[in-house]
Each structure stands twice: as C-alpha cells, then as structure tokens.
Length: 236
Image (cartoon, rainbow, N blue to C red; front, side, top):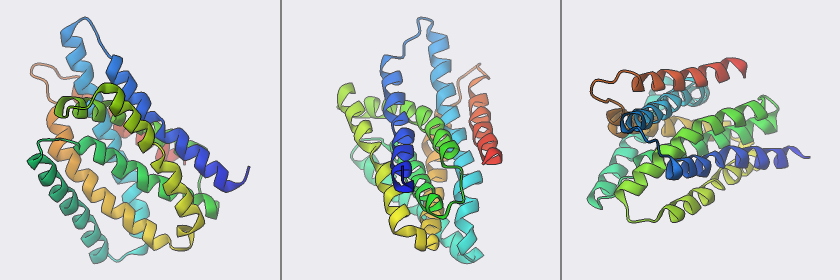
C-alpha cells in the first residue's frame, strides 16, 4: 500500500476507538454502585492523564520546534482563550461538550502530525496510531457520558455522531500528508493551539469530575493515563 493509504487506515483505526468507547459507556453497568462510581471517576481521570501526556510528550515538544518562545506562548494562550470562549458559548445553551471538543482537539492535531511525519518517514506510524487509539477509548467513554447527561440526544444518535467524527482523522491525516508535509510550521502551530485548549478543558471540566469522597483510587487513573503516553513516547 502507498503511504497515503497507510495514513488513512491508521488514522481511521485510531478514530474508531472513540465510538467504541461510547458503546462501552452506553452498555456499562456494574451492580455494585460504589464500584460503578469509582470506575467512572477512574476512567475520567485516565482520560485526563492521557490528554496531559499528549500535551507534554507529543503536541508541545513537536509544536515548539518551529517557533520562538514568544510566538509559541502566544499560540498556546490563544488555544486556551479560544476554548474558554467556546465553553462560555456552550454553557449559555446549557450543553456541555468540553470533553468531546478536548478529544477532537487531541485527535485531529495528532492525525495531522501522523500524516505529515509519515510523508517524511520520521515516525513509527503503527505505534503512534495504537497510542492515539488507546487515548481515544477513555475519551470517547467520557465524552459520551457527558453528552448523554447534558443533551437530549439518544444514545444511538451520539454513537453515530462519534462514528462520523472518527472520519476526521483520515481527513486530517490525508490533508497533512498531501499538502502540509511541506509546511511543518503550520502543523506545529495547530498542535500548540490545540495544547492550550486541551489544558483548559482538563482543568475546567475533566479534573473536577475525578474526586470521589472517601475514595482514593480514581486519581491514580490520571497517573496511569500519563504513563501510557510516557511509554509510547519512549517507544516512538
């Protein structure tokens, strides 16, 4: 297969982890209520840890390569401000989609990076796709529960939406592979902007959902999620 087909297949594989996570969230039920609560808080923490690892180990290190300190900081801050404004607008409509947007803010830049890097032959695409998929699984789980609780959408509708969103990966990867591989600074700028938005989302919406009174295991999910990214970073 040509490198472009490889990019499309790998990013699609990574993206399909989002609807799979949503399906798991839809059918997730544990008889013991305390264990079910702890699992949900733990998955939220795991998703937050995975997002932080994406920022610290992939998006920011790759993003700062083509910018001076001041311009990198400006892009990062712009991402945070942009996400804050979007969050304010969503709150006016009484619909919370912060985790969904954080998931896409992570998935799309990483798909861009995969497509561009694949064109240059500088990355283990299969391994990166597996890591993106492992991040998307808990993020899809959390985003489904958030949308289900804050909107009037049926479960089947949300899952179909997630399947459609999985196509964002192949589209982004193909665009980066065909056009943006010659403009690495553009990809880096997108990654920095996304990093600021993701960091805002983690501390605004995801981290506050983790604490559970008189339970101490859920925050370890964040540690495990970050370790997932760390291992992947070192392997790549």
